[in-house]
Image 1 (cartoon, helix red, strand yellow):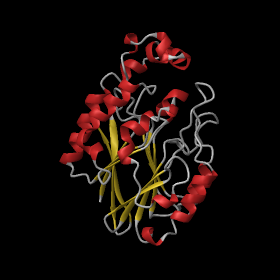
Image 2 (cartoon, rainbow, N blue to C red):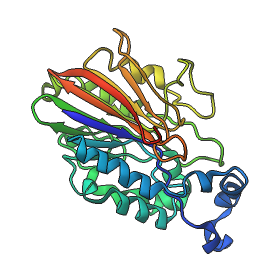
Image 3 (tube, rainbow, N blue to C red):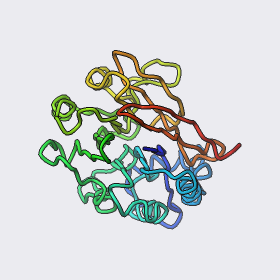
Image 4 (cartoon, rainbow, N blue to C red):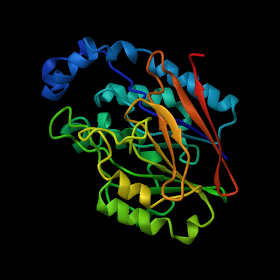
Length: 284
């Protein structure tokens, strides 16, 4: 089976069209990053880039697209709408697409309270093993054909304060994952586990304290070996670490739509294991 992994597409609204009152104080603090930090320019063409990537998916005969979070800049309704429109028909069918939320999609308490992500992509959060869900529908499981499976985990939480962008899967989801990998339904399958936050960066060092996946060692220990892969985003670095007997393959998709860094992973499975991968760029 052939998978396409992209992440951190950050569809960005025109913040000049929104009143400061409606944006709220958390987004006020983000305006500096959008303007002076260049984020708005970097992601100005995010919808068009998503479309280009998904055109590649059709050309490459991809079976399943995985988007590992941060579909929006700062969780505005217009950003969710734009991301959903850019995903097109891929986002209509759970057998063909998996999307999980990132920290930017849980940026405000209001976005979480109104289930803004779920309103947009809830049809993709269905599970073939719903009895294992322990937290807001996570983990969810997609059994694909006879030899593959995708598991979605939630690590993104509403931050106490902007800038505290670390993530945690948590004991409940970890315990569910530990039980899940031994279920007969997953026996002999290649299993792609999708989480937003990164266990470590492209140099193999843990991500910084207030930015990384807090319980990464505990999560990785549950899925060691060639059958398993952990797919993530968050740190805008695109890399692959091969599996060992102590950890799974790890794929960081980087930011697939950031100007000058556009790209994604193609991951192929065969015989119940990760068989091949290719890092692809849209910028040559």
